Image (cartoon, rainbow, N blue to C red; front, top):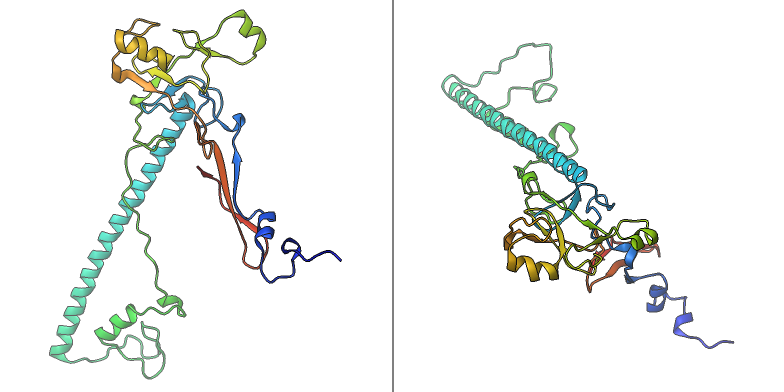
Length: 304
């Protein structure tokens, strides 16, 4: 008979550490490969090769059609929220005016009852139900205090007296934001960028996809290089050439257009979503056990 061991002890009323590990309990880590990282020449929205690329001042690159559609949808959403906020403000003003009218009517009613006495008035003697929903002989005109108590009564078992939670719409921001950096973004701040394609015969025969090079040092551009775009003309260089030549000469090496140091925009590279770039290329997902079910419930992956 085999010796009893803690890993084989499965008749306990709770999960052991080894059983939890076998079920995938805890934080699961996985090293991200090249396929999980967004290339530098891919759109940040559609994750496809760039078509008519536009770049913001923070270095996020988008297709022209994608970013225009995104900004248009944001403007439509802002208009919808503004309309809902305006409608809510109008409704609040109407409710306040109605409350003032009811308060004045109660004051006049109380003044009339104090001077002339509270005499019940009936519009229809055959009708045995009053406006507050009571039946029988005790159905008489209620005082203003009782009417206020009935109006503000909160009873979840009565449909007519069930309290309603007011949904308040806050005033939305009227500025569009960048879908990648969440900073304010306007259409006029976007500028087109131009990559220099490698037209050598060797590259054409080996690779079907387009490869881009730095127009100064002719190095193939990849995610391992830091790239810089000029907001004045849109040409893209590697950071070494930009710091070595353009910062000193104050002129673009391709079109000889004057540029300043503030025109140098560092392009963002790396992954989207939970994928990162640099030293932190690890995706994590936490899995915990369901209460009494033995099944794992997974939270979305988090960037580490």
